[in-house]
Image (cartoon, rainbow, N blue to C red; front, side, top):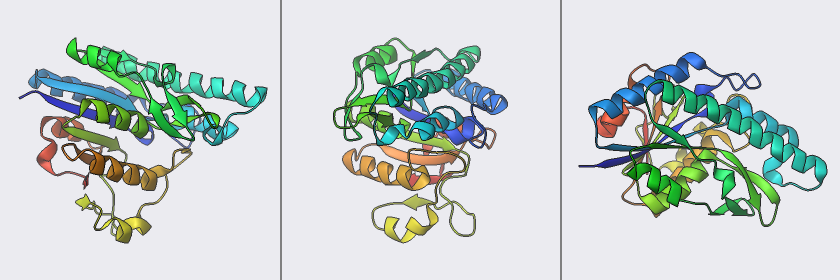
Length: 263
């Protein structure tokens, strides 16, 4: 049976968020190989990949406070700088995937995204659908976006994938980061976070190591709980991309249980 998986490669996974525009090339190359291997053994796997901006877009966005809004020439120049920084990382991710044999097609969210006070309202989904039908792997990322209230803002990778998920209804959304899911106070992964236990677990959901203008783990879990409620057929899991083979296993069998399931 054909399976559609959305995969996010976290910015803290593929970059060093404590240093500006610092890629983790070895990690990225390994992840690209694991994606290629998973596709090779599952010819019917359809995949959409998104990645965070890490030490690329987040650092530039924090410098100009872009997410809060864009007003005036200096702020708009910063908006363009943030866009360019995010696109530089996207090019590196796309090149790594292509080098591994994954036919990744980069699709820039800001080319069509429209927000209203930070909420993503519009974005072209047709190119993503056509790419999937052609056997390609659409590649999206956290980006800038025009905003009817703020002038401009930042849209996270979760917002982009969440918008696409409402149109394309993936079977799974996998979030690969630098921790083995959401960890409890003993450093062990919490098997599942849902509406019934989310409030009690809130103190464990810290921020993000390094610069993150989109809220860190707490914001990501909250947005995924909302998405799970909106899309009952889509299951969500947070896994570690730093453990060799973990991503390949999750793409092969998302039910495997590693990490934290959301919803």
